[in-house]
Amino acid sequence: MNALKWMVRIGLLVTLALVLSGCGSDDTDMTKELSDKDAEIAELRTQIAEIDELRAQIAEMESAAMETESAQMESETMMEERGDRLEAVRERGRVICASNNSLAGFGFIDDSGNTVGFDVDLCRAVAAAVLGDADAVEFRPTVAAERGPAMQSGDVDIMSRNTTWTTSRDVQWGNFAQTMFYDGQGFMVRKSLGLSGMLDLEDAAVCVQQGTTTELNLQDFINQNDLNISIVTFPDNVSANEAYIGEQCDSLTTDRSGLVSTRAGLANPDDHVILAGTISEEPLGPVVPHGDEQWYDVVKAVMAMLIYSEAYGITSSSVPTSVTGNTAVDRMFGLEGSFGQDDMGLSDTVAQDVIRAVGNYGEIYDRHLTPLGLQREGSRNALWSAASCTDCPKGGQVYAAPLR
Ligand SMILES: N[C@@H](CCC(=O)N[C@@H](CS)C(=O)NCC(=O)O)C(=O)O
Image 1 (tube, rainbow, N blue to C red):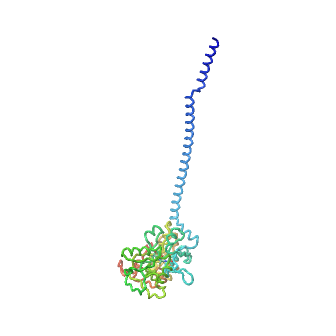
Image 2: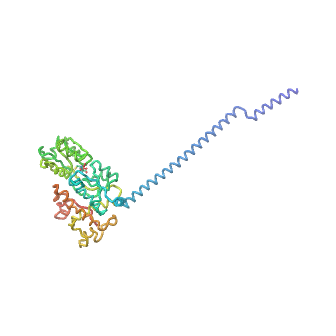
Image 3: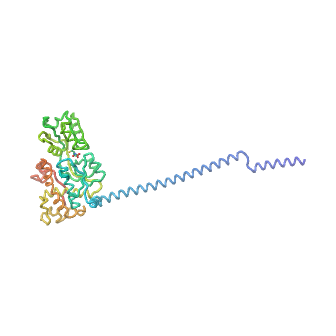
């Protein structure tokens, strides 16, 4: 009986121990599940912390980008307002001018190795205005296709190189300051071909230079007139001219002024004829890089000085240094009143320096273009004031913003 009692007691104790120790199989699963969930939660917390960190980094980057953008805008505005280029040119001591070195009359290297020409003198006029020295110019010869990149790089202060002002170039290259020569595209042919007009170029081969409006206008001309013309392109003026001389093509096309210049340099100019008419408008003039309003204004004002000086009858040898009594002349030469010299960062007597150094528009024209046979009188390159009456159509188109 005693043994039975002990056995029952032991059995009860074992059962109780099992219950208390929670060793039933259901409870074990729950505990494992709970600890798995804890691990998952911990993992999620780590992920949330990582996401928060990324968010902070993005916010930091965004604010840095905004700061850079506003700094850029500020520096652009400051550059426009302050005229950094004028300052840079003065510090450097010379104007960098993209020029032509193979077009007699406009931009050319003479026998003494100097860069000379009508376009070249426009750069020299700017140097006289901002540095008081027309010779303080570094010329950078630039072939047609290099012009866009040269302007976009901002490495040159001005480009003056028989360059046509077009709307796309205005947007992509820089700001065109002033039309200084009105031109149009024409065709030169050997007289022996006996062509009487541009439409006779059917089945001809035409030499043209790459990267020019010339090339584009030629294609328009072919399309519009349904002509069969083979276009032969060249990377520069010299190779195009040589190909024409070597009879690789029947005709050479470019601005008429360029044809007159090229023809004058041929062995027998009389064997060649420039066909009547033009197929395009080619307003040629200097262009400055985008982004500096003050520099742009300076170059425009210098071009206006050249033009108005001629209109007022003032030449390099008659620059006034004391009041003349002619209001417009006195204002222009800094003797009385102002046309904004101070705001542009120029001296009051800037026009005296410019005209004394390079002469007026007419003097520049006569020095370089008249000898080529580019007749000015009665042409579009006469002064507007050459008209015999106000608003009659006989004057030329050379006209600029009034200096006042
Ligand atoms: N006005 C036209 C043509 C200008 C042009 O570059 N013309 C050629 C042929 S006259 C030239 O000057 N080439 C000089 C060179 O490549 O050295 C333009 O702006 O595209």
